Structures are given as C-alpha cells and as structure tokens.
Length: 351
Ligand code: SAH
Image (cartoon, rainbow, N blue to C red; front, side):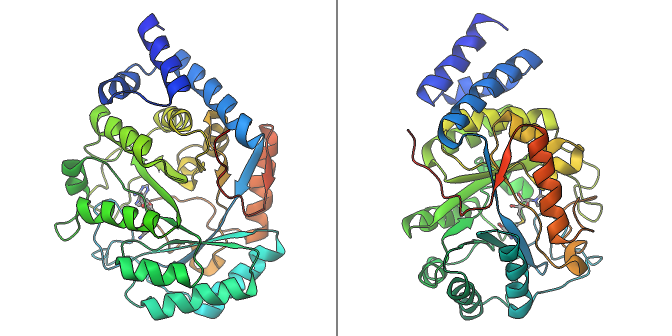
C-alpha cells in the first residue's frame, strides 16, 4: 500500500472525515492489504463502543404490496409474477410474540408502500405492539410518508425508522427510480424523521446499476454529515422480473470495504450484516461482522410468506422457523468470536 493511501486511512480513523475526492481515491485504491487495515481499524473502533456484542433485530415483513416501481426491486408494482400478501394485525402481533419468547426486544416492521397501511391502521398496530411490549423498540421501514404521518406514528410509539437513501447522487437516484419518485422527497423524509426524534437509518445498495466511485464517495460524505443512528448497506442482487435482471450483483469485497469505512466515519453507527450479503456468499454475514458490522436481522415473518417477500433472487432464510433462524445466526456469530445480544440495543454515544 502506498504512503498516500495509508495517510488517508489514518486521517479517516482519527478525524472521521475525508473530502469527496479522498473517499473516491480510497474506494479506487481497494486491495487486500487496504481492506485488511481498514477492517482492523473498524473492528477496534467498534470494540471500543460495543465490545463483541452483535445486536439482533427481529424482522417482520408485513406486506409485499407496493405502489412504487423501483427498477431494482422484486416487489415493484409492475412485477405481475409477484404473489402478493399482507399480514393482519393479529399475524403481526403473533410474530412479535414468537420473537419476544425468543428474547428479541426490537421488532422491525418492513414492507412495500402498501396503501392499506393508512396512518390509522399503522398507528393502531404500533400502539398495540408498544402496549403489549413496552420494553421493546418498534422500528418501521415502510417507505416514504408525509411528515404528518411520521409524526403520528412517532406519537403512537414508533422508536426508529429505516429508510435507505439508496444513493446520494441525484442523477444516479433518478436512474434507479421511476419519474414519480424523487431524490428530494427521499431526503426530505430522512430530515423529517430526524427532526421528529426517531433513531434514523439510511443506507444504500452496493453495486447497483450506474454506481461509480464518485456516487459512492457522495454516499460516504452524506453519511459523514447526516450521522445516522443506523446504516443499512448490502449488495445489489438482481431479481429476474425487474429491468435490472441482467445486471451483475454487488460484491462481498466492496460491501465489506464500505462497511469498514462507514464504521470509521461514524463509530457508534449500528451497522447490519445484511441478508443480501449472506445471499451472495455463504459466510457473507460473518465477513460483514469481521469488517465492522454489529447488527443482524433474523427473519420473524410467518414461514408461509417468506418466499413472497422476494426483493431479489435466491434470498436466504426463507424456509426456516424463527427459532431456527435465531439459532443459526447465533452459531454463526459465535464461530467468529462474537455473541448475540437480544436487548433493545439503542445507539451508543461516542466515547
Ligand atoms: N419500501 C421500504 C422498504 C424497502 S425494502 C422502503 O422504501 O424503504 C428495503 C431495502 O431493500 C431497499 O431500501 C433497497 O435498498 C433494498 N433492495 C431492494 N431491492 C433490492 C435488490 N434487488 N438487491 C438488494 N437490495 C435490494
């Protein structure tokens, strides 16, 4: 590794900031030794705050009905081969009950932008969950909504919200989304969520079509400024019924490299080793943890719907019961020297 790249890595670890050009250079300079040094520094930064703990979030995929038509996504509106479903309030609380029994204290409700979930319907589900499980955090990942809607949901008890920004480059954003969606609205949502007191997660896919070192540098600069509490990054994986079916998937190597950089940009960030990462490599999630991630999100959805929530091809963990999913992830984390913690796992302040 040359002196210049070494000095960039040291500057990043010390000051948690680089210029746009420097981020792009660091991405371009990818090599095994660079990745190893970044991972080593990322793991040290994470250990200082979270030790060897890996937080678990129980993911409940509540609907695959979506009014949007994102070009990369398998549950996009125009996919006629998608077998649509929506969970009832009972089914959702049953999933949470099973998760609670397994020790989970955070539930993530994720879904397509299904118009059925009006403010009334969703607020009712959130307040029901919070009244049965006051000791649990409820996280929503239900896409773009109005500020008023986010405010009502927050008042009903929602603690956190995950909304990946998808890309911090407007032209790139427009190449991944149809005309009726906008970069400005996505960013407006993130600002509103932050303002309303949610713990907020942003994030992006690695290797999405038209992504470059420059667009990635913008993602990193955005994360540096926004300082999200959570940041979901995983490889793009093509889905056979989308316009991007023939585009190659993102790589484990670049995903892990970026996980390390993001850890160094914002050490307290909660960073999942995603299901998509586990999908493109059998040990993808372990590799993510070793690069600086500290969250895993086992699936708590009813087994009967899991295959239907198919954002991309060959998604893993679609056949197992929740308990198996948790045990499998637990064993995987132990195998690399970490252990799973089922507490709420709120973001820590930087030491
Ligand atoms: N409707 C919600 C939840 C979307 S699904 C929302 O808009 O936030 C969660 C994430 O899955 C998306 O933000 C996207 O980054 C990711 N995703 C969608 N399609 C994907 C694909 N083909 N490969 C990898 N990740 C994908």
